Image 1 (cartoon, helix red, strand yellow):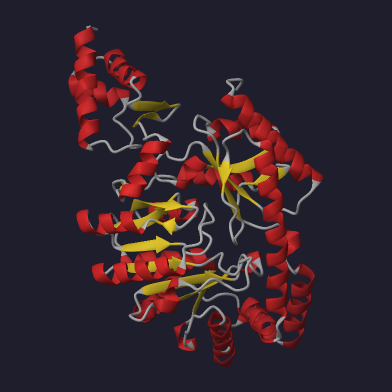
Image 2: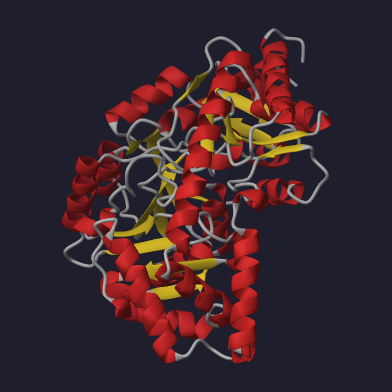
Length: 477
């Protein structure tokens, strides 16, 4: 191996990095492939990558290969401010997500990695009584669809609930689904074909990335901040200067994972931007009912006069997680979504739908949801205070105005993946920032859920996480 040979290969790779052929965070050719392309042995190809690694142009990931280096936090902030999104990327994240989900079934003492509240915070006893009453009074619900008149009643009750959010819907514009995930998946299947590009927020909920991967779609990641949500400047840049995405999926109320609440004026601007560019928006409002203020934030859909927004919501987080009751209102896409739903899945459980209708009608749902919101608001304050007290100096977070999630930005240099390995050894889990992008971003961030009731055990777990983070930053781990 001659010095000039590996340096020439490194210079060629650097040129591709500069030209944008290898966008920041993208996977580079394997050592074997690079060696074959240049007709050299693997050691020469590896030396080229190591040279670029010393220059901080590329980064190595164990058992994954080499990647184009990500910008520093200052560079990333500058790029977001200038409205320049990353190139669209074909999503391949399933293995990372599956590992997170598997942890939910393990014997981990403090589980903070999923976006869910503790089961004891839901009205289990009341729901059990309602189910027994429904079964004894209407046993036919076990083996039948919900009667048409009952479905119409439920749809009217959902419209009355949505009206409290400034959302005017007609009963025949409500379609129930198996959770909000199916609602979003149906919408994507209608609007896209494999290989199409979908605009999403970054950081973005890893479940959406899984859905995009399953459908063979590319993710165009638009910067999102905990303060204001989706960057409209970056989205407009993407719409003006790149291949137009087929649609946008956005969480305007308490975004996952940042907890951002998009201001009403920004929602209106987003809608006008979508109208100008013919962009259909899929609005995910799964956390909207978990608001801490006086009322549910107004959905983007409330200002949609053209039917371009497919609104997706759910009772999963606010009422009964195991019921998996989601719903959508599809604007001028609604009839096509209903046909697609009929051809691909059965309706939701008639028994669960009947119980939901009864609890909406007599006010029990409103009372339980209000109680849940008060408890979550208290738990959010307790968790945020504990993180700031325990984590290293320079740690930043924004206290969300609703939802279940706390986004924690640790000082530059922290590796949340390594922190997670040590935390699991202490029987503590969290979601590392790396899983919230199709590219290896947000490595210094982590997402915690505040759906667990505050306890001495939880307080000790947060202190342990803070101690482990401090040790890593000091070079001890």
